[in-house]
Length: 253
Length: 308
Ligand SMILES: Nc1ncnc2c1ncn2[C@@H]1O[C@H](COP(=O)(O)OP(=O)(O)O)[C@@H](O)[C@H]1O
Ligand SMILES: [Mg+2]
Image (cartoon, rainbow over all chains, first blue to last red; front, side):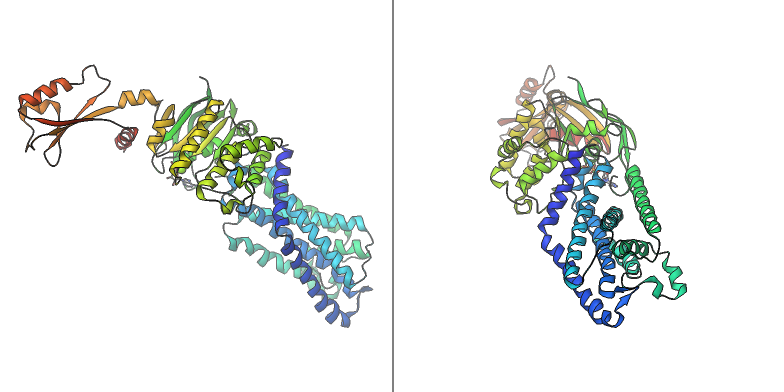
């Protein structure tokens, strides 16, 4: 392993993050606050509790997941698309690094950034509601796993994309609906039976459910199932990346 | 001298189906400066990219110091520095940071003293804290060179390094190249400024249409193919070349005032003396004489035309 190269890529990507730190953090903080105003206060005043949990607190895990997921994808996809777009990728391609090292560097940086944003949202949420975390290690575990697996997914999109439109297409058309139908703002049990079944095909449901469990100890689906779902998704992304590495698809002609 | 880069029967077919390299054989010797000469689209960049690992060979084999560039890429790439044809730099990165980045990417321990020497040598030290987007084109090119040298490679590829570069910078760039050569670095440069290849290279390879047409010591190439021209200016214009001079295959200038005789400089007898006496026998009075040596450019144009 060329650890030095991994560290170099990671640090250079993190430097880019810190250059734009204020934008990176302000946007999620503002949108989280808005969600609290709209859902927590306006709607929450009518709902009050879901499964015995204060509605304002109930939406927090979903809110964090939602932002972290989108951030991981956009950070990682942009992180690798940018050097492809401006041509500086030549340097990475001609360096004595394996594709795995490149992936660890870029994906690690993207995941770190979204993890930071996730934590900032958590802190912001604490200003609005009291938020006990029942299983803090599980919560952190779910958060880190989500950051990493969706950063991997974003990395694949960044390699695949041939232009900026494509770069935004997948998050917009696929991820957005999955996230909003993923039970961030409601419990699956609140849906009619047919929709409950359909929802079970949405991988994001498992993420949010598992994450919410680590906060409140209650979940829509079993925690084991949640973990398995993330595991399968991560595995699929790793497989895709391994194949990209083998074939040089869209990076090495 | 031993070969440090060896290319054997290298073919490259792009995804589009275009065959950019059609069986290239080339040995690059340790410590030499090799100029890779060829018109646009000849396959120079493709060849360099394949040696450096940016494109994959379709078939054939490339080794760098004995390391296969596909199966043993870590060892081969560590030895190579590449200055790409296009200026590609992260716009918001500072010069010093950019150089450190490359060094790290190549797995070398940080050495700011070395980077400082490098930047000074390339007259970039004053700009070390500047972002690359603030630099002029020539300085950006130098940043690319600094990056390519940041990990102290033994082989340096310069892909058209002087395209769009002013005379001063070009001169200082050649000074750097000379210094590197003195350190034993092998240098491969592509250019279509032929005077440059003529001035700086030890050997010249000519490539066109994905094939290497020739590889030869520059001096031998010049001797072998260097024809000279003798231009004779006449006192009075003539309408036609006299019959008696037919054997010399002279070319009459448009105004009828000049005659051009071309001969092989390396030949035993150049024929100049006989030509001159034949001229005076024909009653032609000379005003002036000029000789001109064929440049590499003429040789190159000739070769490429032959190929076409
Ligand atoms: N990625 C690519 N896909 C298809 N054709 C390419 C690609 N890159 C280069 N070519 C073609 O291969 C030929 C050689 O290109 P190149 O190696 O860049 O030549 P040079 O550097 O000598 O100008 C050109 O005809 C070019 O159009
Ligand atoms: Mg080229």
